[in-house]
Length: 501
Image (cartoon, rainbow, N blue to C red; front, side, top):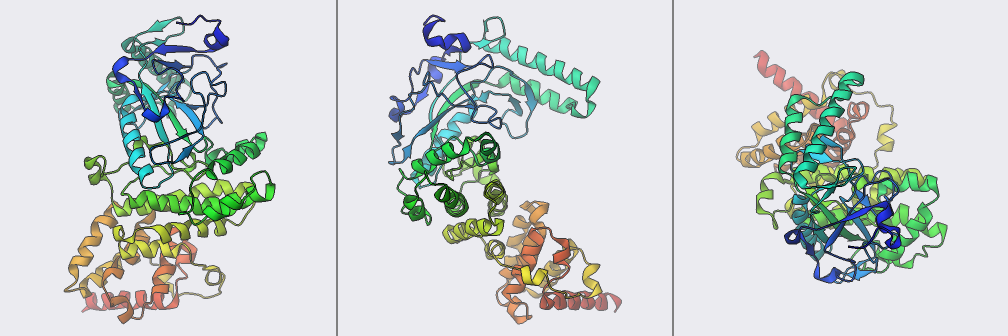
């Protein structure tokens, strides 16, 4: 074992021997990993491993190449990767908290549950093989020893130490901030989760380690230009001919400010939309496509929670087209970080994202109502929203959910012999979150062929109601298209008349 004076490496953080049977290294990564038999565990703030920004709780870079050589490599599918990071190696403040998204229901700050690696690796391999821009896990191992502030301890003692610190923190919260105290059930879940947890360290490759959520802070620090330039250069090393924005990217000069802005406002939204479509076409479901899980090269990262039934068959029960539809809506919020920094038109970026997503989505996995919901996102309703049209008082007294229920019930009664189509909608409506329930319900009856046209409700009416509902703009929803309004009012009156009779 090297001495503590070697290159100053051990003066600032320690490396620990890896558990032999836990070591995995990709055959193509041997030139990147310095020594697979040891893993780093940072134990002081003055570490040579650095986080790209504060949002990276357990992700670090190795600029001094003490762990990784940082030599660009290609995966088994010929995809270029030039950025590398270390995940789960921060033991400076191993604070435990309850987390419903972790497989063990507990998250230890800076550290990684080793059970997530196999999923991340296998899902990544399948996605990369199908042209999806994602991270490439290169290496994983479990440390044999862990720091306790005075020396090294074994895994069990370390977990006891983490749990004791958790208990002390809960007591402190009880005294000064009672609202943050976790209940008995969560505390029990933390204890049980820690007992069965194994900690691991993972190395991974990407086009860039910078996330979309990093943009505001890096711009403020003056680091964004350099990072963005490298990200564009990395993308230019990829074969992008199958991406709509590929030609735009390849024609850019990343050293020019105007070209960097063109990338952020024009190319990146399109790449993200098309990449999410490819992701969903494989049957995958990410769960958390927030700005912290998109890189500024358009990659989807942090695959430890991603579901993919073609790799893990049991995932099929937890993936639905309704969930993927909701994910498409949620993913758009990452664009807000881009448009805020560039001071560009948010609607333009949204349209580029949506157009790329819809165009490249395999609609065979989506119902007509879900495709209509996506289509509605790209329609310009500004003229309609700015109009002075005053709706019938019935509309003001009819909530979106009440209208959805009324439409659904009425159209279902008209559907025979197409009731199977309506029944098939119910699981999707039940699975959708409340945020999108109304929009999906409004459009559920669209699956009943010909009914909409027969009742004078054209596709534009469906799309406009869908858009208003999905943006939760109640004021706009109350001023719905006149043909839609008349249709709803007539059904209300017919239903009341039947009840009176």
